[in-house]
Length: 88
Picture 1 (cartoon, one colour):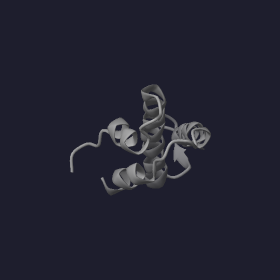
Picture 2 (tube, one colour):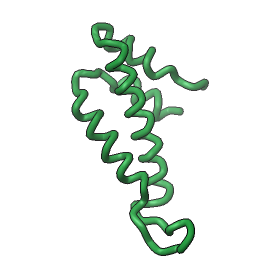
Picture 3 (tube, rainbow, N blue to C red):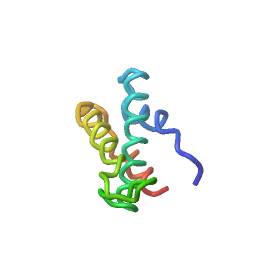
């Protein structure tokens, strides 16, 4: 399957929402999923790249911040799009 045009797919389920709102949601969703994947693969605590000491995975903050954006945009219907993205 090719890369999904997230905004176009969201538009199908949310025809009355502004394009800018859908773009903000799509961007936040993309970053949220990237962060979630990194956390799944590497965990919440990782080794510092230079010193090797344990640190909080920087993607944890990204996931938290983008999750907050997504939660505030409850009006966006996204179940179908999230299923599509998960299948990639």
